[in-house]
Length: 390
Image 1 (cartoon, rainbow, N blue to C red):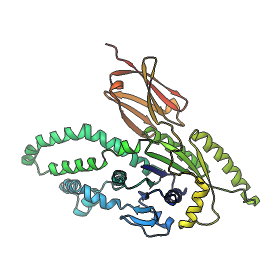
Image 2 (tube, rainbow, N blue to C red):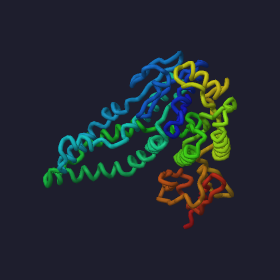
Image 3 (cartoon, helix red, strand yellow):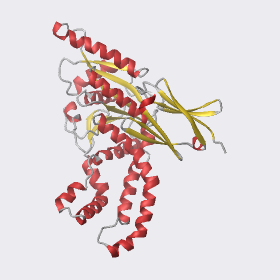
Image 4 (cartoon, helix red, strand yellow):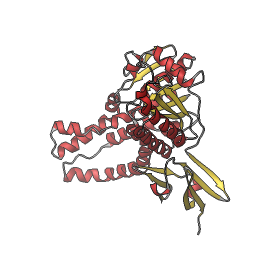
């Protein structure tokens, strides 16, 4: 199975590109499901059909769904929410305030990951096309598996042990609600639903992210940062779609400046994302709504090729042997050495770029070694590990 994740700044046309890609694959007999994880769903509008939380047949070989993440939140998070409400009410919040504060903003979006995993494990699909939320929400979504794994391996066991020890004392000394086994069981269920998602989404043979951009300075700048952060977390970008390019047929002098800026930004895109292929998509002469218009658009974008094919084989994260040292190489496009913060904590390498931080769990071979140095080599951060000195 292949999974394609489409993301980009709000308004660049990522939903249109995702919908067109799904139709293009289905028209060739590829069993395809297209899934929207964007809270502001517009996938149904693109197809011109009604979509909801249950899968709907859109065309032959194509099924679509707009996830109602709130329902998944209520199903999995209920025991935890009830405990948080009890604590907030004990602290003095009234019932309404407690209910509102017990829902962590943005948490409902992460349950889309469990649906991606379920579709991948079902065995009845060849391609899953995901219309992701705009870039900031997508990065938060895709960084969750790392954060959750770290919490479950380090914080969760200790917290559970401490709670078991202090529960009898606190129950006699105060009315403060203490988390019971039901709360911890809910946290475990939450983790289990997402366990394995990271491995699935960082397997380049299975999953590719595709960035949709318009040839505008602000859009390109955000896409370049997104490219960096996706690489930081190990996600593979195999194509960039440069959308809404003014076609040569537009010859009115009023558009001359726009065409000059677009040409300039297209050169920036091709340079900034190289060697990732850039797929040009012309500005349509009318609104791209409905299967017929989307199929036409997909033909211009992909030609007769297989849109689900792996279009670029670069590796975000790799380890190699170099003269007896092991080198951990991390693809960080658009980054200079001063942008990077690096630290070692036992079996983890702590790597920070801008506002995003990742704890890379080291393999056995790297864990037994010491960090000897790090340098930027082109667009890759190369961290050298040598045999530990005694």
